Length: 576
Image (cartoon, rainbow, N blue to C red; front, side, top):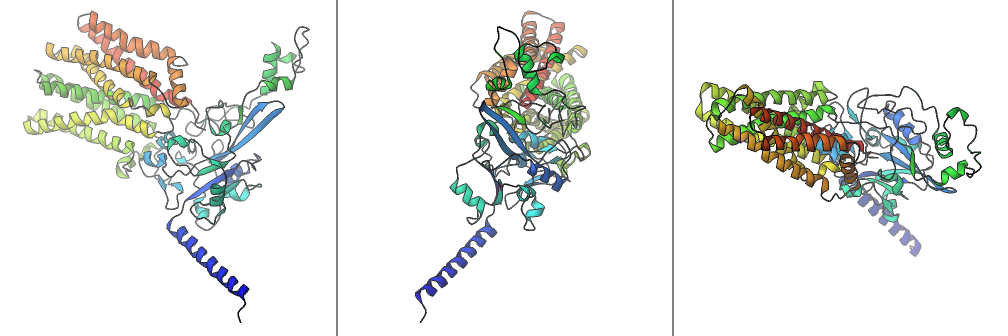
């Protein structure tokens, strides 16, 4: 007879086989790779960083994975926190959505991978990533990031960082397979993710994650970290430091605390003044707050003057056509001969300047046609590229039909150009909205901001042209009213953008920089006073073409200053 225990063993065997088959079926149908970082075990050895650099031949100064270190507490109760930083392989990856050429894509197993051969170096992915995970490779001028060592995973190996970690603090695997260690850890341990409020559904989980390390706003970024020689930015700028930091921060603290004026006189960390208590290293550490002692080098301003200027030239190009189109719709006399011609010419000129600036900003400018030839349609860079192309074609058709006196073609192309100008003016707001890493750009008022600036710029540039080729009083009044109403609405939108409730700390910090920080003089003096109040006063109180000309020049200058601040200020905040 078969013993009962043998029957139980056979039953257990069949159960195990069934469970294995079920798990295998799940693995084949649904896979999602991720990481768990166990901060209870991490010792901050940086072996993962070194292994990653070796595996992928990552250049000096940029990292696919790195260990951020933060010191917190008051002596003697202090703690050093280590947090492994890398791409979060988000389920809803904003870098994939904004990439115009499908250089970034999500694999079936959840890994967010990239194809450097398609990358044009637009840096949109770096603005979209809330986790500072991407960089521009200084050797290839293309974007790069952690790709989960996909080439290793495909042959059944674990990522290099997982293999090298001496404490098993990095755990990888299929999170959808309940038999894997990572799935069990996520289900049994209290885990946290970075910036869950972004809605990206990150797939890097931290056990014992510390807010002081995971939240970049808790500590200030510095370029003078220990073991760091990059002080001027890396990657896109490829600026390597010329010398190492010669003086330690502790000596600087001692000098400041002890009132020592001459560094050469520092022989100890105490003061001999009889009316002051002796200050030691311990006393200095007691007042120290949480601070970063190691992080990846700063990548600098990714979208610089080229982007600010292209937003400005685009506003002028679209605005000139929109103002002329409105005049044509309203039936003003002389629109065809005196406005349409200059509007077409100015629109094409500034549109060409916009295209040149867009190409200049690319780190791979020779690939600029990839936006049109290899499009990824969820990206507003792609939609904007096609909008600009169609807009240029419609303006050319409008010019030809006007010259050839093709009435029907002229009317159809004018309607098309007028509507397309609206799209060209506003699409940048949606592009900035896709840059989820920059909270300030998520403002719903940014669309109004772009439209109003385009109308102001159109009225201003046509008023300047009016000095060269005068138009009738009705059209002059049209330009005048466009600027007047535009200035009023612009001040209103600026007030809404800056003084409405901002839901995140990052947005509040950017507003602080603009209103009362490093941009306050440029904003209040350039944007508000010279760019809006003075031109409004000139248009309201002073008659004559000269006053309108001066007001127009100031309006255009104010728009440029505003766009410069709006583009640059949010990039001052660290993302990691």
